Every structure is written in structure tokens, then in C-alpha cells.
Amino acid sequence: MASVKDKITSIQYMRIFAMLGIIAFHFTDHSPVDFNSLHSISLNWWFFAIARMGGGIGNCVFVLISGFLLCKKNKLNLSHLFSLYSIVLFYSIFSYYISAHLKFVPHGLFSQFFPIITAKYWFMSTYFLLIIFVPFINSILLNFKDKILKLILLIFCISSIIPTFTLQNYFNINSKIDIFILLYLVGGFIRIYIYEQKIEYLIKYRKVLIFLACLIFSLILFSEFLFAKYTKSISPDFFIWTVEKSPIIILTVLLFSICITLKPKLPSFIDLLSQKSFPVYLIHCGMLYPIFFRHLFNPENFFDKNYFIIWYVFATVSIYFICFVIDIIRNFIFNKLYLLKGIFLISK
Image (tube, rainbow, N blue to C red; front, side, top):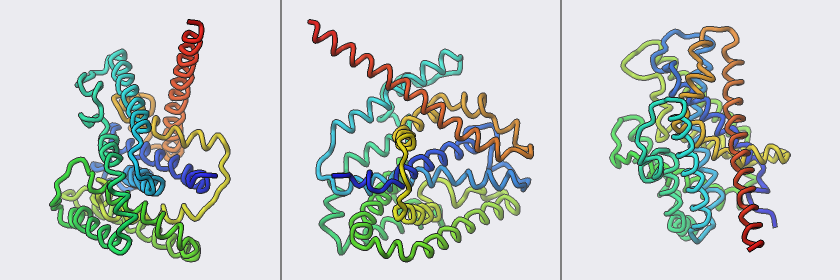
């Protein structure tokens, strides 16, 4: 019997585009070009402004997908958790070694061996905490149908709307676990109470969802323009970053709802690219980010060029592909070592 993930092929595409969005965002965050300091409005600036949305949307998409796929699990999958941790640990040590070899200044050796508890990768630290609570969250999703929507709205109000418009975060949780729980609940709610029961409504009103997504996207982009053009007291990405910002959450939920109604064909290569989105994240945004965003692909050298947008797309896709190849090589080596270990045990 095919799993939900196999049936909804658009999820695999969502993972790829979400990671591409995160990479595009990191050009605005980790490169020498500081988006919040740019006040000269040009076509390249507009594209940079769109790329700035990619981080919030991409992170939210991954948590929504987790809620959608895991919402009916009633047990904590320790083997899956261990497998994830082993990959995080490998790339944490790998990135430290490479950065030291290239004479970057590595810091925090302890954090490289304990990347989750030291929040070396903030997203993964929060994600692991979320996964631990999955059985409890799922019991709420499945057993409190009449109250779950009220709970979602309550968390959205306290953890997103209030911090977005008043800058007062009453939970004051740096890990953003409250937002991850919110997004997980939304993903699970969409799966259980909409996709499996009322998918025809999503399909029927898909054009309305697309209109609303375009409207919010335009309003966000317009806000970036206003803040960049007319004030220096508010950063242009005020309504974009970090992930608790309400416009980004609403836009992501709309995009997610649209995508799950689509059923594109899934070539094996696209499926493989999707599976590697997690290692791509670990490789490009750890201690190796100076290699990608300041040496191999430095937007500072191209920002004023007419072909900047083409270069930006090429650089973003190239980083994904480079990280993809690195993880393919890791898999190949580890599989060979595992095979050799099996042959050695048999020979004994």
C-alpha cells in the first residue's frame, strides 16, 4: 500500500523548492551583501527582496510537511531519530574539519560533537525537540477534533500575531518550538480534517487560495519596498524574518494547501533530489557557509550587473547540486564500508 508521501508527489517538489528558498535566503544573510542595508531600489533589489522570503517560507514548509506526514504516528520512532542525528553529527564534524583545513577560524569544538544540544543548527535542535513531542501532539490532533482549531488560533495569536505587530513575545522562546508546534498542528489538521475528508473543497477553491497567496506575497513585497525606501528605523524584512512572522506563516500555509492538490509526475531523479534536501541544509549552512556565500558564489561581485538574477538562480541551484553530490559520495562510501564489514563478519 502506497504511503501518503508516495501518493502526494507534490511533497517531494515542495521539499526541493523549500530548500532552494532557504539557500536563496542565505545569500541575503551570510554573504557580504546585507539586504537590510540596501536602499537603492532596482530590479536586482526586488529579486533580492523575494529571495529574502525564502528562509521563512522554506523552514515553515518543512515543519508543515512533518505534521502532514507524521500526524497519525502514535509512537516515537527512535531509530529514525538516531538516523537523523547521525547525519547531523557527521556533517557537523565534517564541516569543522574542512573549515579548519581551509584555515577558516573554527570555533566551539564542543558544539561540533554535540550539535543538537548546543543548537549548532538552530532548526535541527528545535526539530528534534518537536519530534520528541510528536506522540503527545498527535493524541491532541486525533482526540480533540472540536477544540484543535481553537488551539491553533490561540497559539497563532500569542506566538505569531502579537510578536509580529507589537514585538512582544510573551513566550520568549528563542528555539521557536512554539511556532514549530503551531505549524505541525496546522499540517496535521490539514491532513486529517481537510485532505482526507474535504479535499474536494481545496480543489474547488484552489483559484481563491492562489489569489490570496498572490495578494499576501504582494503585500509583503510592498512592505519591504516601503521600509527600504522611506525609513531606516525599521528593517525591510520586518514582516519576513524570523519564522514567527504572521504574513510568512499565512503565505506558507496557503502555498502548502495549493500544492497538496497537485499531482505532478515524480521522476526518480527528482525523488532523489528531494531525499537529499536535509543533507543539503546541513552542508551549506554549517561552518562551510563562507565557502559557498563568500568565496564560490559572492553576490557582491554581481549585484550591480544586468545578469544578476540569472547568476543568482544559477548559484542557488549550484549550491544545492554541490551539496547533493557530496551526500551521494558520503552514502557511497558508507555503503561500501558497511558491505566490507558484512564480508569481514561472514569470513570470520
